[in-house]
Image 1 (cartoon, rainbow, N blue to C red):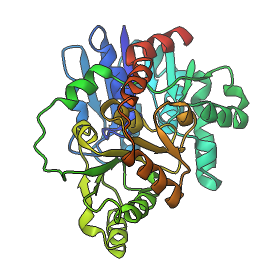
Image 2: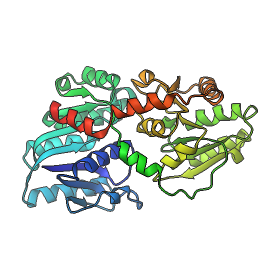
Image 3: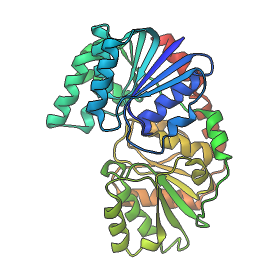
Image 4: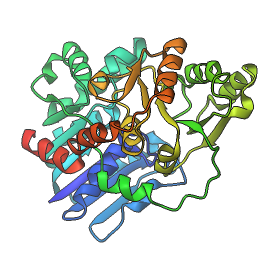
Length: 359
C-alpha cells in the first residue's frame, strides 16, 4: 500500500506524535510519504523514521503559508499517484487536503482525519469561525474522522451535524515496543533523588501555573521533593517568576524540550498531567507506561474511566495538591497490572486495524 501523512510542521506535539506513530506502523511493510508544510524545529524527531520505504518532503523553511503554496504547486505540476490512505490530524491541514481531493489534485482511496482537540469547547469568536471555515472547506471528503473521546465527538457533531456518520470515537494509540525501547536508552541527565515530573508546551492551557502552586503547598510535608518540567514555550519566564514568588525557585527545574521523556517518567516519584483542556493527553499514556504513581486533571473525556489514575478538577490548586499528596503517601504498585492491561488494548496495531475496518 501507499500511505501519505500530511503535517503542518516537523514539530512533535500530540497530533504529530500520533501521525509519526501511524507512519512507523505502516513503513515496515508499505510505502510511506510524509509531507511537512514548513520547518519549525531543528531537532527533528521524524529523522528516526527512515528507510527505503519512507520518503519525506519539506516544502518551506519559513512558515506554513509558504509551505502550503509550494505544496499546491507541487500537486499542480507533478504526476499524481493514488494513495491507499491519507492521514491528517490538524483542522487546517484536513480542510486543505479535503479541498485538494475535491479537485483531484490529490487522490486517495481512503482519507482519515483526526481531531486533535475539542474545537467547539476550546475556542470562540473569530478563531472559531476560522476553524469552521476549514471544516466546511474539505471535511466532506473525509472517510473516517477520529475523535479521541465521546465528549470530543459530541461537541463536534452538535456543531456540524454533517459529520455525524463520519465521526467515530477511537482512543489514542500507543506504541508499546517503542516505549519499551526508549525507556531503556542510556540516560545521562542528572536528576534530583526525588522529583515530580510533568511535560508539555509551556502555555496556559497546560495548567503549569496551578501545578507550581500545588507543588509549593506540599513542600513543608515533602521538603526534599523537586518539580521537573519538561518542555519549552512562551510562558517559561512567567512560570519561573511564579516559582520565585513562592520561594521554590530552587525546587523547580525547567529542563526544556526533551526528545526522550520516558527515563524521566520512569525515575520520577510522581507523574502529573495538569492541563485545563485537552483532546486527550498522549503524555498520560506515556506516563502510565513507566510509572504507577500518576495524577491527572479531568482535562478530557474518558480519563475518569482509567483505573489507577488519580484524578482531580482542572484549574483547582487545592484539589491537585490533595491528589498529589494522596498518591505520594500510598503504595500504588498494583497499578502496574491495571496500566499494562489498559495500554495493551490501545496498541498501535489494534488501532490501525480498527481504523481500516471503519474507513
